[in-house]
Length: 394
Image (cartoon, rainbow, N blue to C red; front, side, top):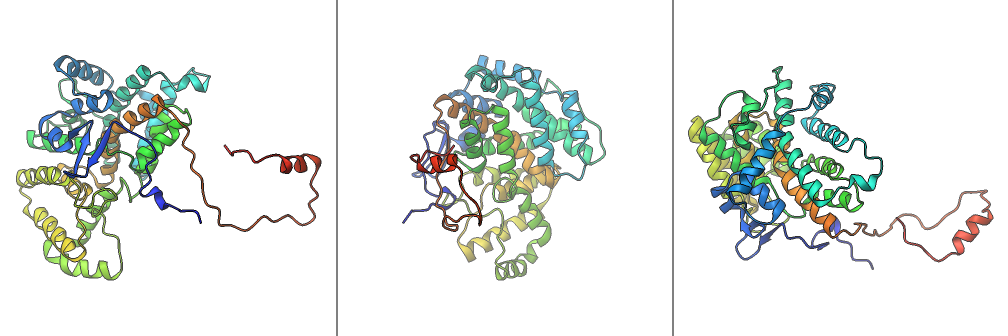
């Protein structure tokens, strides 16, 4: 009997040098560095460089990356036009996916041979940087237009995170907010063969271009069992209302066998190693905005859920309320995830291309046995095909 691994659980499908969870320390490692150390000491630009190149940048390398990123922050007219054609009621992830498709068409325009569109390693590093640079404008403009506000041009005197906040809100963010936002970007940047990253690698394995792989990854990330979970956490907080309501709400939710988003993880069995760093950032925001009610609700739900189910929070649990305090709309949370994770996605796409093998798993068929349409008479070609040895399907 075929041994089926639903969801590929426990299946190792390839090697990667980009990230892993160290089971001994329960730490997520980016190129060997614990992510909590990177979040405490590095700007997001340095972490992006690390994911793409394997080592942290020196001062000159970081300066060069920043110059390139800042030169490509603007929202191209045709990308903005494509976004404006979408209804403001569309989910922002559809907006981001569409924008990346337009960016893809612009980047690969004039390339008629699909093999040429795959790009060299150097070309795809440049494409990765340009796409990463443009996504804050896409996400920020999306939130602003849903609020009936105008596009805000980028500034080249701000780092990645501070400029992102500037384009979204039109004012200089406090240092506390920039720091918390930077940490969230670093924590969300990469996480091995998660669903969206694996989707990107599957697409890249067909020798499709980098942008198409990212578009597929965005589609995977939209799902509430993956990136959409941070939105769901805020919906839960809104539904509960206050810490005093946690007990009755949780009683009802568990009785109805509801899935409580923001808890549990396929990889972590002793709690998500990224949570303490993001929770510390959330605490700074709670103090900055004077919102002890948020901390009380957070702590009450966590303690009661862990006590009853023994399941610990994942990164989406503290990031949802943190983004809400910063002023982001709930629907913008998953696009923020895209802006961070595009660094990890593109690192994996380039790694897949460097030692490519088409990802094409098998399946165990459980449908009807072979049967035939009544009255059908096979012709000679059909008979010949049935007599040939079995060939692998594409």
